Image (cartoon, rainbow over all chains, first blue to last red; front, side):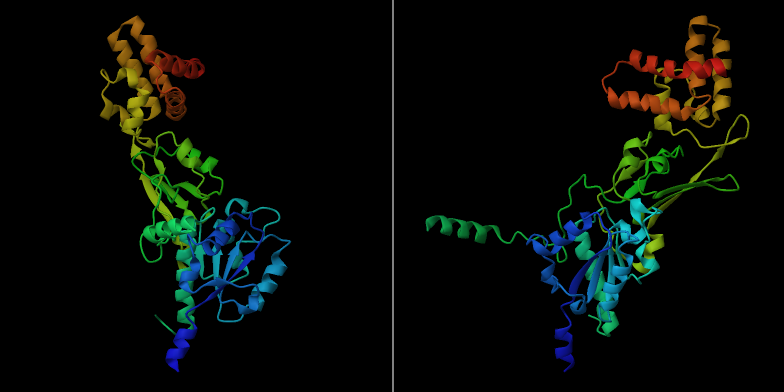
Length: 146
Length: 229
């Protein structure tokens, strides 16, 4: 039974939230998963359309005032245990938009972030590295160390 | 039909085009703009990097005991644009091609590069100064490399360098040389950094400029200061 349990949790599903990003990081996220060159699906990850199916959530963007409530609502719909990855410098620190009048971020003011992947944007390999770190956090949270 | 077989054979021979990254090393271009790094031996503390930094990632803070200044670049807000490297007059800031930036949240605030750059006491007046980096000095004093005592000169504050230049010119007692020495001395007198920047700019925009033009640029830039001082 334990063996089955171990097998069944090897595939964290990813969910993307755009918290007011310029789309640079989103393009890199699409590249990471959707073209064979950087294929994140080798790690058992795949993007899902519904937050209720997700295990790892990738957030891009500096959390603008307009999108804040929506982001928090969607993030709350992701079932525990979830792992939050901040992709790009914007969610991590506000980046070049820090202290802007419409910026509510950095994102860890509102959401507990687990892994940061800074970059403007980070290259796909760096995002994959972040997903691997997030997967380790997720496994630890499930009580299953690899 | 045959075309399809050709493509199939080629693909089998080439293997997968997927980047092997998580399981093996990936290819990183040599000039890939990764983490910013700084060489404390070359930094003069002019803070132009902090001024041009888009994300406000660079922090330069003099210590209260005047022993030097702290230089910090926080990778978590660095947009990797390379402006700091472009504008650094001494080439102290460079960018590595290290892109391994993913880290856990616990390390968020120490994901930074930190350097302490010490001041030294001017041999003339005991003021706390940043030593003029030697390779910057060789550019600034390009025409005086043969007749100057560099190690002693670098350990003086701009004012004492000016005085030293004047005394030296007086000792030489050659009117043609006085002009030259005075302009060079004042160039490093009231602000060695603008002079250095002008020299650097000259070098960058016109790499093959003969010495005469470079001299002209520096003298023009320094004439108002020479008269004011």
